[in-house]
Length: 132
Image (cartoon, rainbow, N blue to C red; front, side, top):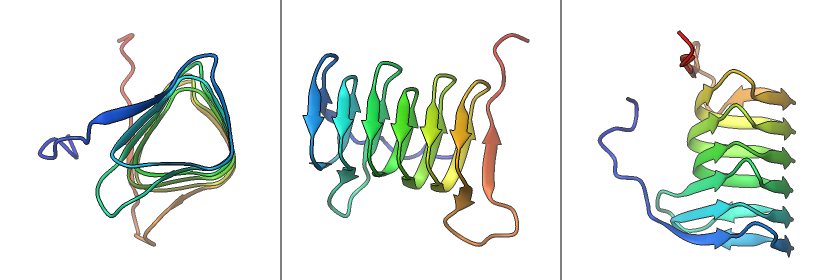
């Protein structure tokens, strides 16, 4: 596993189901979104961060964090400086920048996928299907 030696930051904040946030949303360490955000979602600070956008969530705006897990809908650009995980329910309309990408079957992207570094072979992991 790529980040097995690093302990993930704690998720200390939650946008609950049924909650609608309008405007920029800044956070440190970890944030889980189960509701709706109409505005940019940005991790602050120079440390590691984790953002989870659940299957019930909808974000309309830019998304920026070091580790991003998406299983809901994002309309806007996504920027992940470490690992971007696109779960089966992910629906993204916007360009994606990533260091490493894990994309599960069923995830959909309408935009450009571009690694942060102009490497010859970007770090791309295909998620194995559990049906086998």
